[in-house]
Image (cartoon, rainbow, N blue to C red):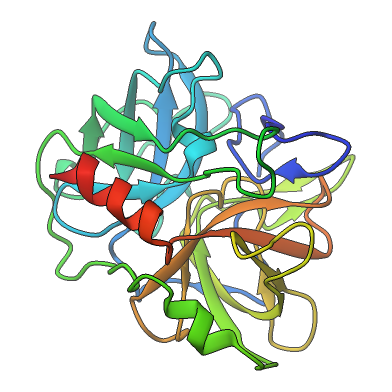
Length: 281
């Protein structure tokens, strides 16, 4: 896992490296996600074509894939060189540590089922910065597919300020997360199914020092709730839970082992929406 944020403050829910222990995804009370065929497992590669890290993300049209900025960031002021995305629910479920491949999907190196897999050599970053300007980390990335993919439906972006009205003076608001990340993480063990899973969490607040209108703070602990973990970064946060309205992307957590609250970077800001529109034209 690549810890990209100030370690004393937060631990990023970013890439899972192949060197990690056999790993899973959404934590706590999750279920397999067959509802969002536009959510994909994305692997990024370095200039030599070697595996760098993996994240999650969503298609908003046949070529535009939204993920987290710290996923597309190459840590050198640019963006990653290339990526590959698997849209099947099982993703890399059958990954074999011995061969370092999933014999069914080709994860993380090939598209064994081209009908549900795409590559990319064009991606953008909204200026992700884990130090300057926190809590506005600008944690949004866009990946443009090399060829179109139509899963039958897509995520859609919220109107500017959508959450301001929805969350004002309200409590007990639910959101739904989807992704392919770890389902359990501890100092001695990590569990990953590499499947698309989903779970609902409750809003904690939007105005604390870690949020201030830029992030959603969600609680995944409790009856019927689920949370996010490493590898879920860039995955969608939906509101209402049963809709395809993607109001935020999974961004970071306060604990390296995915305990406690989660944070998602809001997309319902006019500057963010304008930037996405400018790079996806």
